[in-house]
Length: 587
Image 1: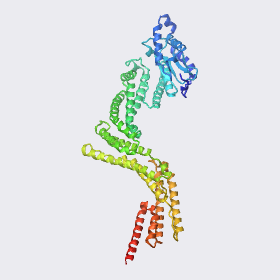
Image 2: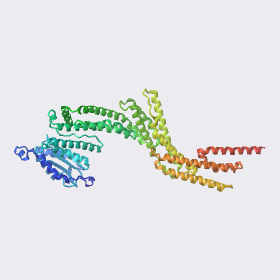
Image 3: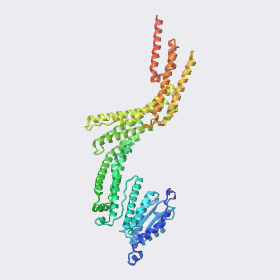
Image 4: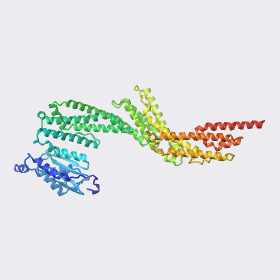
């Protein structure tokens, strides 16, 4: 074993030493002795020892266990466990990098260990009865699994074999003990993301016709089957909540139904345990009120498995087109994939016997929208804008707007074509489907507006140098102060909106809309200042040359949509002055 592979969690077995001794003593009561067996000639043969030695080596599971790790000392202890029918426990583990075996729990701290224990002492082991007489499990750093393995493998056989306690005390204790094992099993499987049940081995040797005589035993089995019903039924009925919560992208729905199918199939396989059938037969004989309910749940479980199997088969069709969408490196490639995914949706919705409701279709379309939005968000780099590259920012965010527009256009075309040629009308709530699409598109347009404002009012442009307006007339100083005021105010509002840059792609956050509202209000204020500046300047204009010069100096402000009308008005005014001058010359 590689010593560097040791896990960070270790099993402390120091408190189990005395307990293993008590197990040996307790299990030996009423079972006879090894000496008696030897006197009767019941001994294990060499051939059986060799075969079972090989069996134990094959079964043993430890981290990094290799064939060459087995040694003579280990084999000696294993042989002793096989030959001496009064030995209850065999543990195999690594002590640092040396493989060891012990007829009890190790005295050192170990990463994991493999435990074998006899269900019944003083019974000679054979090739045929080994799996019946010996149980085994791996104990590792997972505390829930370790406790469950110890309780079911060591404690449970001892507890259920107690016969000398008063019936009232014994039944109360065993009822609580069984309840603890049921909850421990549920907790253990939940930690693994699975659904599991505890199947008690109590009464495995009691026939159904004799079991009803023990009312305490029947009461315990009733609590067991009721717990099974509640736990399994919750998994059967819990499909809608789980499916809705875990659906960020289309393929996640497929993964969910894969998980659901495997989980429900796992429950079904656990219910195929012969001991489960034995418990049910006992309760049928005892006329338990829970049996009919349990059988109904079994039928519902079978139906749920069939539904999950069908849904995973249909949703499997999404894997290939969704992979193309995931692998699309450019936003321009996304519109080529969308029709393929929409076609699969239409096929599933029209043909699946179970996955065919409008609610499920809406959920899948929302997931598709979410994936498109995610792909768009992955291309966002607001740092480029903040570093003074508005043209690059405009190009980046217009690509996002175009991608989202194309998605909506393709979706609307798909609906139109479907409804023209299919009797089952595709009529779903587009507001839900496009909610995130519209939000991201609005925010992308916000950034485009910011970039345009950077060029217009901040004179920020990575391609060209926009000169600051200069004036050479009487009121030049006054006009320069206004220009400085415009740029100072823009820089102030720009810095304020960039403080909320992290919330730009947080589509459920209201921080960005609030910041953008303040930025727009600031721009309106700046635009009013520019309009007043233009009005004041034109009060000084006395001829065409001055008018053209002013319009040229302030021309970059005309990029503002709100100021464009003002510039058109002043341009018309200069044009009239020009025509008037021509007429004067002609006269």
